[in-house]
Length: 268
Image (cartoon, rainbow, N blue to C red; front, side):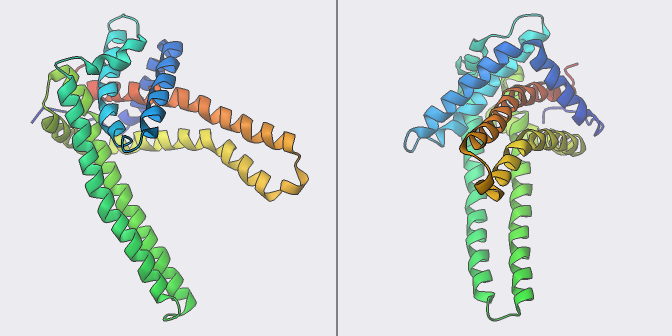
């Protein structure tokens, strides 16, 4: 087992700060990387039967970006090419395998979850008319809540397994399966810091998307009183704001991934 260390929960907030500082050190380059990354994702996802391949490719890109963060720490500039450094040997194969294993684990998790959703829906429908209205509604809500909690927990577990894996591959030449195991073990030891970091990300995400969602609800509620020009400006402006937040959010998350690796695996 790759040695890791346990850090206080407050370090999760520090990871977010470090990630933002890494973005602020080269904002133009990071924005270029994000735009290219998103374009590649859209193109690959648009190809029939190739969308799942993106899950395999993402850890390869992330591995290259970890090298970009390392270059910045040593005073070298971040470059667009760092997005593709993971495709170089000898790191390509283990990074691709990390993505393939993550995809397989995701499918294993999703299939039972879908079965539970469908089964719960059918069961709830069958209850309608056999139980009082309040009881059947409460049962349906309970089933939906149970499935949501289950998927959240499983998704969090998958995130812990993938979080440190690309960095372990590129910096320590760890094999794919061992990297996933070490990542999960280290993340589990630091679940408090991960929860704090996740809450910070959730808060930032809600702040970014709330104006857009609010504009949609406002237009839907008062469509008759709002002109088409105002609708375009309102929804278009808030959507642009959300997109600009994504341009900051994604490199901040990658930078936080690098900072948390150095913190938890004792690289500092």
